Amino acid sequence: MATEYAKVLGNRLRSVRTRQGLSLQGVEAKSQGQWKAVVVGSYERGDRAVTVQRLAELAEFYDVPVTALLPETTPGETALPPPRLVLDLEALRRVPTEQSGPLLRYLADIREARGDEQTDEMPIRVDDLRSLAVIFDLPPSALTERLIGWDVLDEEARRAVALPDV
Image 1 (cartoon, rainbow, N blue to C red):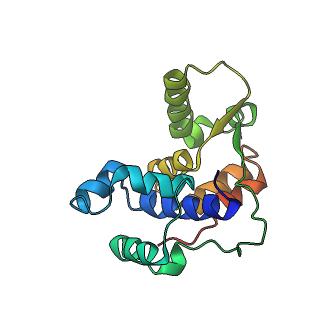
Image 2 (image 1 turned 90 degrees about the horizontal axis):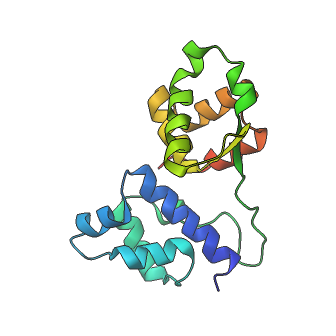
Image 3 (image 1 turned 180 degrees about the horizontal axis):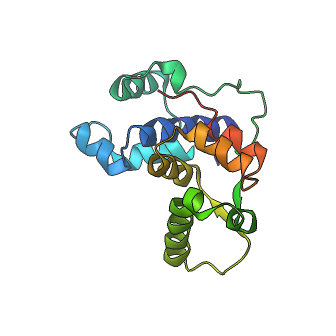
């Protein structure tokens, strides 16, 4: 069973990898097999302990400082759980379509792919938020602020994009 620290470390590892546009298979391919997708995935889930040496090697591979991979909490500290990102679709419908159109189309595609029921709330992942930021040609933090300003996303969502860009 993964410790809370291992889970937070894994979230940092996943965040750095996804910001670089890499899938787990992409890491394996780019590293020419040095980093196996299954191993990196187990680090990211917190299922497997990563040694300091391997963490340093992974930081070098991602071309980031080791501190970019380390959680901000100490092992004895309790980390806050990641915020739950839930879009208020009723509030989104009140935003002029010329501003919200790309978001509405993206969410419709997600709903169709997931087979979601039609409700006034829709949970999204941090990766969805980052993809939306690309569509809106904004940094994730700026899109988050826009969605909060539209009352579409809770202010707690700021923590989801609070990791420094690397």
